[in-house]
Length: 255
Image (tube, rainbow, N blue to C red; front, side, top):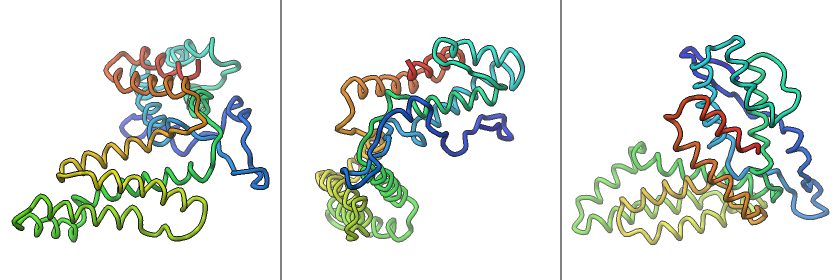
């Protein structure tokens, strides 16, 4: 963790697993079945890190970038949750990040190939979304389609062709990860083919991008899904609350 030139908190990389996270057993021997990862339901880069940066940034701004006031504000809500929290303010914030990343309620042991496939699919969907406005060749084709008699249908034909190429291209290799990527992308292409208007297509891509930032693992217990989603909604809705209140709410993921 560091402060940038604007005084904002920045987390670089991803913390090591906390002790409780390491206790979650995963199969790493392919002879015994599919290789597993400790999979986040809410992902580190997509949700956890931005929330941590925002909340910690608010705490550092509210209580000063260093000193006993900030340290006490950080330690107070931790006392009943964590043991042996030591160090300066930055080290405490890094310990919080490590615990949030390794919150047991947000982890499930499941297939590693699906875990990695989700990251690939997410980037493909986002690349396609960016290309709708940033790719000169694609925008030219859309402009030409707009001048045709049935402009709506012509634009959708361009969009669906691009979706198929972007999402399904490069998945012929018969590895487990690429097989999972192909399966997920085929489902997404099926969804976008149901769109009848360009605006619906764009909105659906945005929804799909959001959906693959939450890992709906079949091995996740119902209570895990309920609690993690409730926590995310809370953190998304409390951005205007006082820093201490947001910090306390963030730490409930550890309860």
